[in-house]
Structure formats: structure tokens, C-alpha cells
Amino acid sequence: MENKINGYEYVDLGLPSGTLWASYDIGAHGVGEFGDLFMWGETVPRDPETEWSDDDHKYVSNNDFVKYCGRDNKQVLDPEDDAATSLWGNGWKMPSFTDWRELIKFCELKLKGESIVFVGPNGNELHFCRYVLEEYDGCEFSCSWWTSELDSSDDIYDALYFYVDKDEDCDPVYDLYSCHRSCLFPIRPVSKIRAD
Image (cartoon, rainbow, N blue to C red):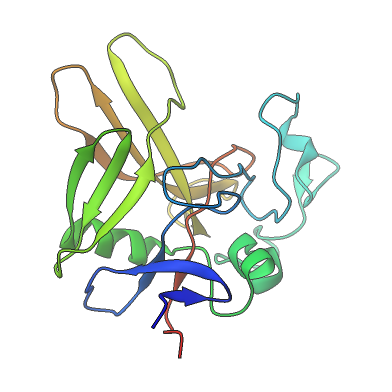
């Protein structure tokens, strides 16, 4: 049986929830390839070389957000604004805060070549490409991926993301943080279903 849903490969890490993680980011065509970058809540990728501002977000009007804001009390992306569901079809979604927390808790993080690797309880591996999001002295890599949720404890403009970085001669540091939703990060889809 192929490990694919809607034609996209997944890895079963043996997680307690049964969550399946895509083998690569949206926009990539295989493990080891970089994917596209998105603003949170948008389904069309952005070119990082093009100038943009917070006002360019599709849900900004008159310098304010008109969806996922204090007026509608939405904290989690609707399917039409979830890039994974929109681009990869039903069965795929952007990972939640809980999905990332489970990955951190139950998997071992290792570095292999140019990959950040999560080794699941069953020994299967999930690879993420290393890249440099923020460059600073001694930085080997700094990478981020979106969640599907806003940070309910912080500014309503901030969304949650997974971040991992590594300085020279140090172990990687990783956790969940929040930043403005107009930042550009890749997306690693998840699924709660298995292919037949």
C-alpha cells in the first residue's frame, strides 16, 4: 500500500493520536526540497524576494484584519483559508498547536545532513529542510513552520508557529512561538485519515 493521500506522501510516526505528517512542505515535490512560503491564512504562496507589507494580507482592510479578529472570535483557520486543505484537498490540514506539541513530546529530534529529522516512536523519520530564516552570528540554521491557530494569549494579530534553530557548538533549540500573521513561513500538512 502506498503511503499517500490525494497523491501526497505521508509518514506514520506511530504517534498516540494517529496523526500522519506529510513527507514534505506544500510546494515541494519530494523530501529534501524547499516548499513555498505563505502568510498565515492565505492559500496563495508569496515570493520572498518581492516587497510586501502587513497591509498586503488578503484579510486586511483599512489597516485592520476583517477575519480572524476580535469581531468574529475565530482562532482556527476555516478550511477555505487553510492552505493544506485548499491546495492538497480534503483529508489534509495545517497542523494545530496540539499536533506540533505531540511531535515535540513523542519524537526525538536529530540532524542528518541538511535535514532536521523527527524520529517517531515506531522509528519512522520525518524530514524538514534546514534553512536560515534569521541570520545572526554563529547561526547554523533557523527555521519556522505555521500552525493553523492564532495565539489566543497574545495580540490578536499574532499566529502560532514552530521554530527551531541551532548555534555553532550547541544543540538545536525548538518550541512554539507567535508572530504577526503576515510573516512568510512554509507549511507542513497533517492528516488524521489513512489512505485505503
